[in-house]
Image 1 (spheres, rainbow over the protein chains, first blue to last red):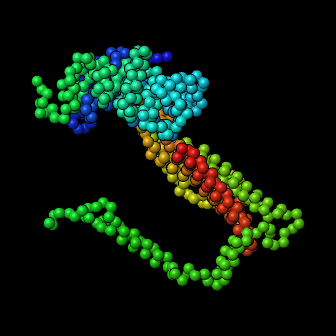
Image 2: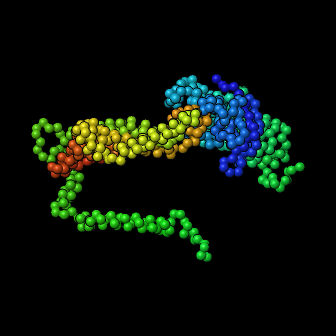
Image 3: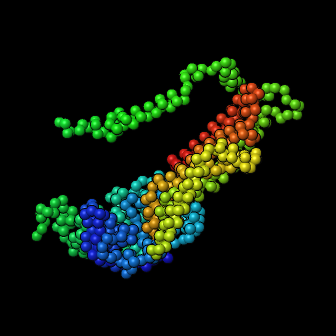
Length: 260
Length: 298
């Protein structure tokens, strides 16, 4: 049922929203099944990169390739098909607050159903579907919320519903924008561990943006450091040194405190 | 000193300063002008002749609504309460049928006249098709908007007059007299609710590769549905009142009997019918607030 893992590659990508550049000359490649975190200060362009990877934000210059297909030249149907293989967990969750958890998770897969089939699934879930969603929620520790309305859940629970929805999509790649932001430290650690283990066991590509640099260095094998829309480093985590991290987040790099 | 604007002068919400002052003055002048043009004098507020007695008698009758006919009726006539209930039943039937029809018209028209619907539908791939599609879409959009504006800008009583002339005094004309303007109003309000609904869940669904129709149905509609349901219930309340008033044109609803009783100066009977109407409106209000609590608040 799962899609095969996806590869992403960016070549000289730039972006501006009719103002100063948001991204400048970005190039990197993510292999199928790789686990990568985007790190860097707020406003560095992490969200923009993630939204480019699933084609919801077109680049001004350069090319974005998913599975070696150029998103710019892909027809609408092809783009839709590709998107159905990419799970996305946005920062604001994008859940439907007045529907139940079960319906929100089911919504993750409706792109692969007809409209009538989707209507059936939203209104009347089959026993097998209920079991599958329940199991998924169990792995995230919120199975008792299955039939609750989303707007009655806490922020952290909603975040995990959004993750469950993306996973229910059985994607070949999971993109997550700050998927731990609403969780307490213990839950954040646990959830990241679950995501990494899931990605490993199912062999899916995992790209996430993280603000907790400690967790990122501990659990994610490759980090891409972004600052002001440029890549500062892109390496295996164990090779990244403390002063590089400090420079990434430093308030005044122009002072050159950490420059060698 | 001269160039420095004081904060009180540039404050955007001060009603009595700046340009707003002239708007306010203009509105007051328009009201005075209209009142003078009407040629009324406060003296007309005081009932003349035996008007005061009629008013007194009518209001006093409100304390003692009739439980039986106020005048002799032929033997074998159904009791008054049965007649009231029957009128009430017909009033509700007209309202419910008219409203069902209005919903069947208003829901699709509401979807088709929302900008959200046309935004979600994906453009064709080729350049020429895209332009033909764009022209066709904006044409359909303007036509449907004009259609619902026409439907709702004519009041239901006016529709009743038109349909009476066209179809005669039958149930169809009463039902359509409610269904047409109510359908237009529902369409207008539904389209606004769909356009104002939050779009984050729709955007998210779009990102999973869902089709435009799916995005609209499962990402946007659920956000607007609770408000739409609550508004529909409110309109049902209005439809019951409209249905009752249609009786004044001869349809066998509450209004018809109110009119008859009023003409015959059976004021106590008038109140029996009015209380029946008030009762139904209160019950509907209660039901709709229950519904609103369930679907809107949670």
